[in-house]
Length: 324
Image 1 (cartoon, one colour):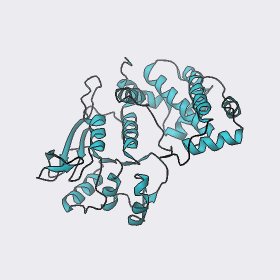
Image 2 (cartoon, one colour; image 1 turned 60 degrees about the vertical axis):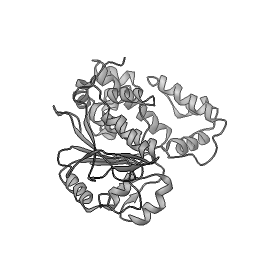
Image 3 (cartoon, helix red, strand yellow; image 1 turned 90 degrees about the vertical axis):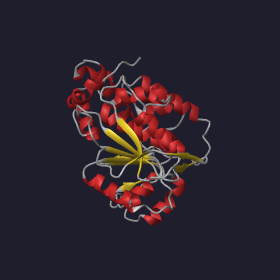
């Protein structure tokens, strides 16, 4: 992952080819190509293709993006989709390999992971695509460690998402990692969606939601509003009208992490927001986000984010914007 401490905006290419999916393309454009003059050094994005012919898209539409012969002018590449049974043209295969070898960052939405798989960029790595394509993906790319039931993976230079809407979650995560939590939240509000869905959440729920789900979701909402308090998992289970065992099981099934892990993640998000948007001391932020001590907060920052609170503030505070 890159940290957006460069003076010049990142140059982004949204790569499309024949048979492109319009919804995924729309998500990529909304995330990275929409002008945002209120954000310093925002992405400079182009929709590109290697084809010199108009491209067919879902719904029978034809589009003509900007034609390129290489990807060397760009810093990040977004692949909104790829027809899973289509052979990859040699020019695209070579361009992607060269782009990756030169340090370019690549993210794919949904079926776009098949393009990464075909050119060998997921070999020896973890990968994910839409659950309906999972068996096909595992069969064709056995050297990739397929991760079931997650929304997205974002590791090193490569990120990939499960379904179409999970591509938005991945895009928000990319923006958060490069511009900080506050700007990611601003972009999410423009999209009228939650600012952050953790990538470890399941792609879908296999069984109907139980009646307790309303108590469950209300409990999570309540916990987020009271992160500064010493919350215990037993307390949350009781508030949700569940036994601890049932609460833990439902938590793992719907969010794919333990309640304790979830509380830490929520406290980290609150701490990051305070680091970006206030001049409070590290000790005060630790207290208000529920870590109680600066030592505990520093430990969790290093464990989950691989950097200290002070380093995080230095990297992202300059990109803070008004929440209005």
